[in-house]
Length: 277
Image (cartoon, rainbow, N blue to C red; front, side):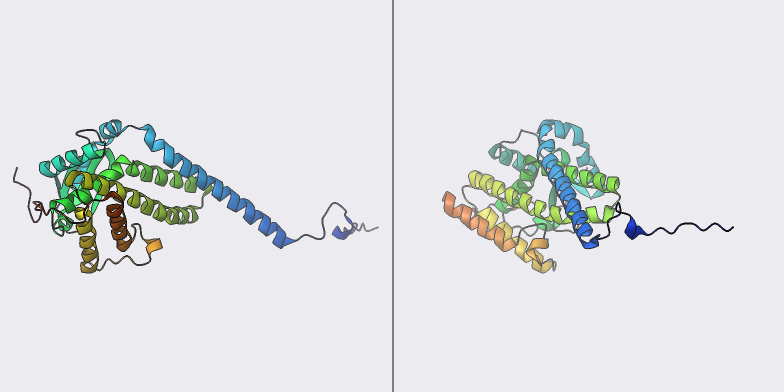
């Protein structure tokens, strides 16, 4: 006698749902995914906004002061005592510790400036050559010093490390890096706006006018045209639009009562090579 296995019909089993809505399941999964991503993003931002401030500025300089030597070695940069002295003067206006800031001048053919770890600032000769006065130089210098005061280098590093760690944990590196990139653009613009305001205030107190900021942003507009580096879409720019920054100078001048004309002290850092050792 041949045995025949009983036929099983899923429709007869009350424990199996027969009206499954796959679109509903997909929507639920996407909602949970969105909540998870938002929670991770909020946690990272909370850490970024608090963790760097647990390290004092002198301690940061002690830990990361070697970065300046690496900059000098890798970017044709040299420390400049005179511009570092200017930084010390501005630092008093910005309530920064004495001897915190060391300024390097890079001879690379790039119109740029940035602040990095340990109180180190790099100004590029190509940018300095475009600035018409000491006040304009002081404004870009104070802007980079404001990044250090606001702990922006450490905040940026912390942000990158945390996003990379999350990407490695979840195995979705491309998506997480895309999310981090979009978020960091706004983050950078916010940092730039805050640095602009702090720099304009410090330079106005030092020189009695906001003329240096006016000259700086006028020069940056010309630099963008000269190097074909227009702002493009403002939302995708890591810096605010130059016209927005110019309007901010005008607003601060109106509110503070400082004049908008510079005293026209000469820019002694134009087209000057470092002294031979």
